[in-house]
Image (cartoon, rainbow, N blue to C red; front, side, top):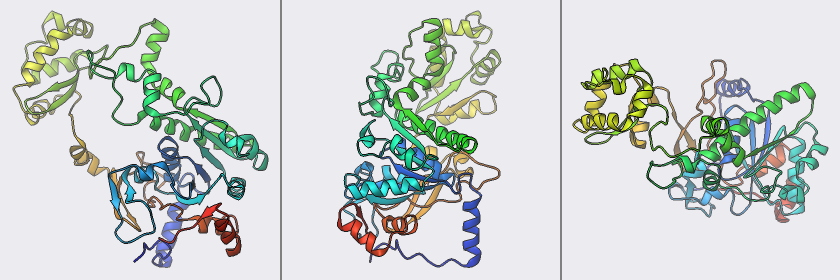
Length: 434
């Protein structure tokens, strides 16, 4: 039995009206985005736009699709036979591609490029993450498409930006973490540089790009014209250095690794317990006094720890005293001691503990969608709540490769059955019946 991609259960008038009403009330309802990105930064950006109600048309290679379709395990296995060449839908791909339509187009084929241009004419936004200059070689660059659609917001996400001596280099999260200072400041004090546990540079660039696209749409409302948005991993990561960058630029202070400690506050770090770890911060004298009281430590009146500056100067002695005290207790016991002490603290949770967190559950951070080929899929929903828009109520499952090729060519571009057949036979497009 094939996946039921093309046969959806009929909705009653009331259900259909509610769905249409929900979509219409989303902030980006009516905005069409042509998504020519793959892997993480770009798909994360377009997923955020889709969460806000934009129509996302994801262009994928007809054979391999988005690179992340093959990035596994883990894969969510298919529940019934499909024509897919993949062992299932990869968790990586599923994590950043909800609320999208997938069309399989080969842009190396002349007709494939023509289809992209036709879609660009009918789109508000195009997002791409090719190496700078590559799409321009195919006559699909900003200058080319702005001529056919002057209102188009064309967003480019690259490793190093559209100009400069490194512009033609491909960008990778871990490489930019190393090159733009993040890896230098991450890790234990006496250890080697390490990368952050998630691709934070990619994700931050996607966030920057998503905000920039919405700003460009607002600008278009005033000017009537689109523009080229140039976002890069290098610039985004350098901007994320924030106060660390300011300390260097203003004071000439070279940064260093601190582990979980804070350069200017003590105590402010992770401490080991008898069976785990707890993160504790005492950012002012009152919090430090409360910490000492709750842990039964006679340190609050010690002149070595009377001010934050003194605590930073005597950090090693202070930390050793706290470490010795906490090593006697289990994590649960430490948390019970600190509860109600009016200072920041938390256990160091693994993912199982994170998703079992009562606040995570209460806020419905995890959502579940029904995928036509792999069944129920859990995913982290939109991070922001809106009082006047049902963001997160509209959750469509990540599409199968080329799931919507025929639909988009027919409904958006007005292709006839014969035109679709010719596009497929030429190799410019691919349709699938899963």
